[in-house]
Image (tube, rainbow over all chains, first blue to last red):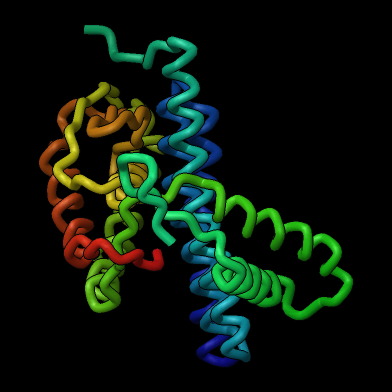
Length: 101
Length: 177
C-alpha cells in the first residue's frame, strides 16, 4: 500500500463514524427538527471525508471534478430538503420538542 | 432580456441563444456525471431538457454576480464550520445524556436580495446547531439545537461574509446569473 492510498483510505474510513452518528441521531433524538440536524450535518461531513479520500486516490482530473460536483450537488440538495422538511413540519403545526423545566 | 412591462424588473432567459447556452451547460453537467456512458443518454437528455425548462421558468429576480476571489476566501471558512457542525452533532448524539435544549429563534436579514438570502438560509443549515426552518421575505425562523448557542451573532457573521461574496448591484442592463 502506498502512502497516498493509505491517506485516501484513512479519509474514507474517517467518514464512516459521521454517517453512523447521523443514523444514531435519527434514532435517539426526540423530534423531526432535531433529527434533521443529525441527518444533514453529520452526513455532509461523512460524505465530505469520503469524497476527499476518493479524490486523493483518484487517477484523473475528470474524476476529481466529478467527485467535487457530486459533493456540491448533495450539499445543495440536503440543505434544501432539510429546509423543506422543517418548513412542512411547521406548516403542519408540529411543535418542536423542548426540554422540560 | 428584461421585461419592463410589469412594474418590477423581471429577467427572462428566452432568447434562442440563452436556451442553447443552458442546454449546453446542463448537457455538459450530465456528461461529467455519467462519465460519457452513452447508455445513460435517454435519461440524461430528459434531465437536461427538464433542467433547462426549470431554469427558464423559475423566478429569477435581481441577479447578482458572485465574486470569484471572495468565494475562494469563503470556502475554507465554510468547510471549517460544516466540519465543526458535524463534530457537534456527533458529540451530542453519542453523549449518554443527549445534551440538547432546542428552541426557535427569529432572525431578520440584512441582505436585501433574494439570491443572498437563499444562500444564507442554506448555509445556516450547515452551521453548528442551527437549521433554517421557515423563510418568508425578510425573516428567517431558525431551529437551534441548544438555547445557549449565540445563534443571532453567528448567523450575522455568516451573513456579512455572504454579502461580501456579491459584487455591487447591477445596472439596468441584464446580468447573467
